Image 1: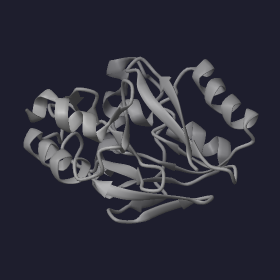
Image 2: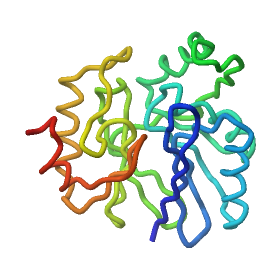
Image 3: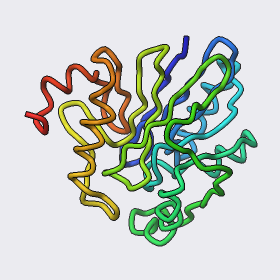
Image 4: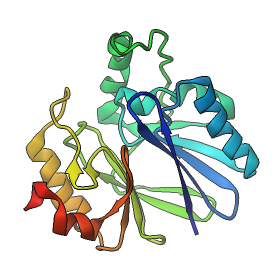
Length: 212
């Protein structure tokens, strides 16, 4: 069974996730930590639970989801994976980070690219990568069919959807990604989003105002 631990970091209130199972192996998704106490919270949890991080995998490369990638990558000497289409958006962060008060953004190197349909494996856990653009051109989500959840990033939220007014965003593409990729998952699948609390596929299909 895969455990999902949520941390809420940085001024954007971004959700960073640590996923791990009974083997102790773990992946870190969208590390947005930026302050010393945020790093200490993340590292302390990993140490306390005796976890062994093996990779960082990101849903996309907007600033709030990548602030901690480089430091966490160095801390654990682990690879960082992102969809190739989002690489230019990662490279662009340094050009605007100071506008948000982040004057020393540490740009991480990408070790490999994520592709739709691949299976990310750690311990006994398998996560299917699905391509869900619209909020960001190279946005992906990670689905655990064994444990009925999806780490969805900034695509589908509780009673809402991701923004599409940022560079590379597209509202129609986002709606299509949700309809054809997220809403085709079973209703009981829990959705861990990039902001706010979790929801379920079934609840959003019935209640999300963007799909009335």
